[in-house]
Length: 141
Length: 227
Image 1 (tube, each protein chain N blue to C red):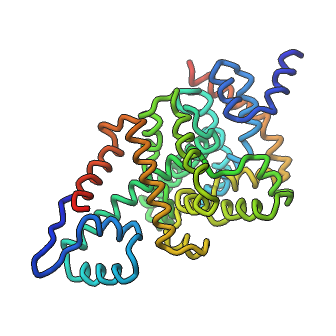
Image 2 (cartoon, helix red, strand yellow):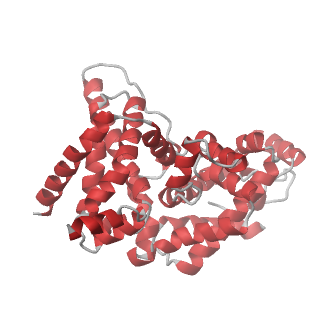
Image 3 (cartoon, rainbow over the protein chains, first blue to last red):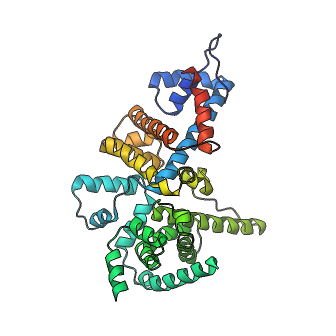
């Protein structure tokens, strides 16, 4: 990414401003001024676009690690308590936000498994265990 | 009988402990892993197949494939991360591949494109997800979770919730502000603070040379020249 020049009759945005804008750290007035400038300046528009892509990629990488580590996921026994409506109200609300707003798929899957009494799936378990073992020993050969 | 006693004892252990037992060669631990995790993984696979409009039978196949991959390669792949998240990642990829191959067949047959559901995480290729673990090494994979937990332990629940909504939910700062009652600027500052912390932690603990993280930081350094 190239360094953005300042000065001249048109004040271009600096790299620091571009970063702050994309990260949402500029105040409303600054955002208005910046956006008004960017509308008429192809170079700055390009810089903002590149910066957005850069930030999105970094966030995606962090999110990938977050997904693998699940640092904010409640433990399974807490999800069981949530399913049984036995959590204190503040904690219940925090778990609800994690499930419904953050939409944690791992926790939703665990909760679904806790709530669903599926005799077919239970019966499938033994078949699955045997099949998995057979497949593993075949692949190891 | 003695073996059954051990198995019953282990059924109370956590999944990471059971996985470690399996990686240490305790074959019976595989049964426990399947018992504890198969149903959540199956439920997840069923949701994914529904999203991609595939037949439900693909869910069971994808779930089983995920366990075969996890258990046949033991510690090579698992590397101390959350097994459930790892299994879900495999399921997601298996189902996505199945969906794509079906669309390729339909396209050549002249059928319409159903399109893929939006996947915020899909921006990072599946193979890249293990880049950080590859960088820190299998034995040290736990330090990544430690880094996250350390930061979360130092902030209040409101900030933790914001990070959860951003990195689990993929929500934009404006949306997070709306649902949590914080201002957009506050949300952005909290997210940026965490990212600065994580960048610093990575630089101290990981050798990023030649990786995409390094590329991002080089670009970042150039960008910050003016600040």
